[in-house]
Length: 455
Image (cartoon, rainbow, N blue to C red):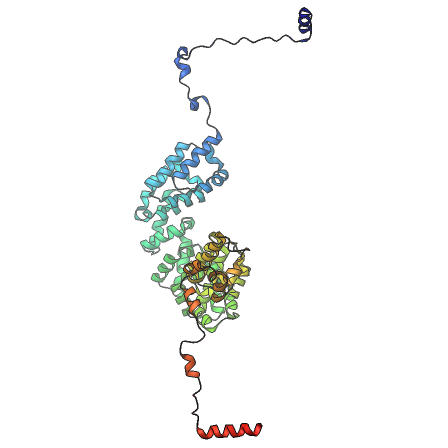
């Protein structure tokens, strides 16, 4: 029986061949050339590893880690560049040019090709030819960006400085022009003289012209026929005298940034405002030109955050108090709305009153109360911007502060004011109480006799 099973197994089961493994060599017997194994020598550096090394390098120089991926994706030429050369370029910007990290980040974000090592080494020698005019880090940043974009040599900037000196500009004004409008290097000397002569013909003195360009260097980029002459004619057509226009330009040169027809539209908006007379008086306290320019500045501020001009005009029309506030106050309110309150800027079209209320006394305390109630689950529904800003102080206190005593400090001194508020001052009701008539015996007899007649 056993022999029979063996025959069956030999017929049906396949023959398995066991492989023979080579003999192992002890590690001590491996030659030295095979022991010294280096990954960088054996494998080429991959794109991913280079991207990581670049990201680490840029992060050391102040680049935010959240923006590095998109920055390297947009500028893929950096991945083909030498990492050591990029590190040298960043070192030149930091040590030789003495730029702060925030200026380095803004310069490289605006013009990444400025990291070219040969370009920076050439400018490392050329920046000395500008002398005192290149001591400001912001001037160096502007010069490097404009020269890299348009391939301008240091000698051309040196000749431009000499031309500006010949025009009568002070050293401080030349520094401001190089910082705020470095494109002046691409304007020829004859054109610059025409623009100076234009102001002299109108009646401006050289000191006034120097003050204008020191405050608003971008005026050098405005052409006479296309921009300056039509703008001055528009001011005169609107009824403003030459002397008035001259004084307003000297006080606020940025008025020249108004587009043709823009001042007229802004003044039309102001004349149609429906608001308290005291607010209107504050808006026009410094004249109509300054009032119209204030509207233009606030429209530009709202547009920088993503709104279109028509919506910005409607917001100012519905909330005139925002014209009185400074631009910095409006910017702080919008940034608080976006970063802390997590609302979109389009919410201002529904609740323009947000820009008109006090930031420290109303916006911040109400936000703190709502955030605390969200954290403890005290809100059964989601509140919008209208629900936070629209209620009066008393109504907001009664709805969200009074039921939670721990919110009293968050709401500030107004919680105490709302809680102790009375209809009239203490003791005032006594002044309105009618005097009590003296009761006479004869009056009592008359009343009793009258009552008997009724019975």
